[in-house]
Length: 140
Image 1 (tube, rainbow, N blue to C red):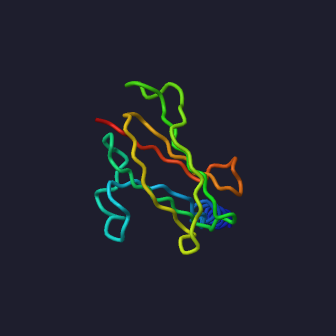
Image 2 (image 1 turned 90 degrees about the horizontal axis):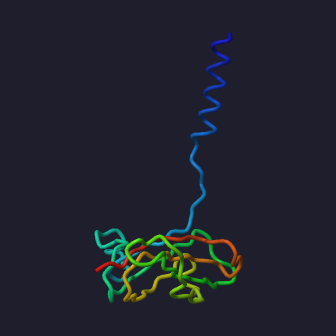
Image 3 (image 1 turned 120 degrees about the horizontal axis):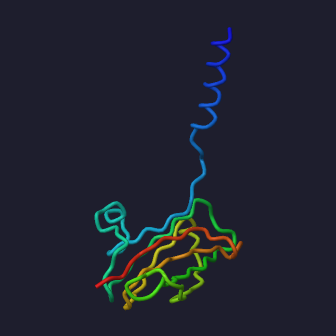
């Protein structure tokens, strides 16, 4: 009797903690080429770029943003070869999401200074909460 009860407790415990969640998160993908159905899963997806390259980015949104406005920031992390001291806001833009693209936004940017960068995305609905962020690097 005790053994069956213990097995039942362990089974319930495992079922609760190993069940998958249905909580999708926003993601940023970087690519050397414009995003198409062929390039979305190709080897050209990378977070390492050369100065002057076009850095294409794709921001996915699991749920539509009510205000249809995203705020995108690019912050340079550190300076020199250390890449760990301080932060510098390099670029920021508020973009409007089109009606046919409510679950994603894509564009590109060109950066000429080498360094480590973070792209942060906020929603205009809640500008204090980061929807997603991702690191990328510009190196010679």
